[in-house]
Length: 340
Image (cartoon, rainbow, N blue to C red; front, top):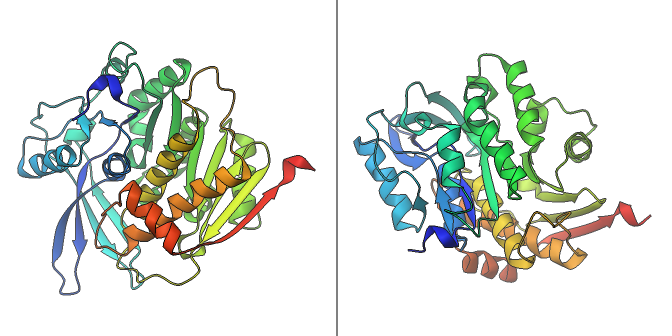
């Protein structure tokens, strides 16, 4: 295992158990949570990854922790806490799309403070840390005092911030406050990932998802925005007017979509980190050539495509994503509105 001095990305957010419905009416427990899965996926993609939240001492917590360690993720809070592990009941529709109900009060991954997160990411602890990220249930306004100060501190320290606007409005008591808080968090991000459903939940204006994504990019200071459309492919937009699109040419044998967005973002961050010079506070923007942007997006798409062909979240390695992209050429387009 690598040391904290080599950590490239630090993630903060939920780790939970997905109780996934089966055709016979029973529920299958699977290790999960958006940020948990994203952390695993980042490590499997070859980035030295640090996970910042604690695990429970209960059976589920021990299993979550062990999988993280087995897949190479470092833990800033190795000691377990007495609070129980969070649960999510996941029902899948006929297309394999998940619908969630969460049990989140007094749970282990919420036993963390902004002070702890900031201390774990101090330059003396993680001198080569380039990225920090969050999303999923960490976007809950109830946790604003934890994650918002941490993101602000990391941005001010010259770290690059990635936020996955992975919305769960059905479990938020005040949806308007939830939307407003997410926009506040997105204002700290250099890279934002959204799905077409996320844009609808945020009530972003626009005739279609691409128009909504372009509008959102005008409302926040992010350098890049990734938009996922499920089987419809994905876009990568830059603040300078570049737009990349990629879509699989042939339909996939989809088992379920659990973890697809997490695998996509992990692939995007891994490919972007590999393609760019080391990021620093002196770097004014994430600048991608047409060829590099295409490569980065295709790698992210391949990562998601491999995940949806497995049950639960089984993120691929960097090499597996590279191989899939090479063996399954995607439909791609590029537009540079900034050059006009």
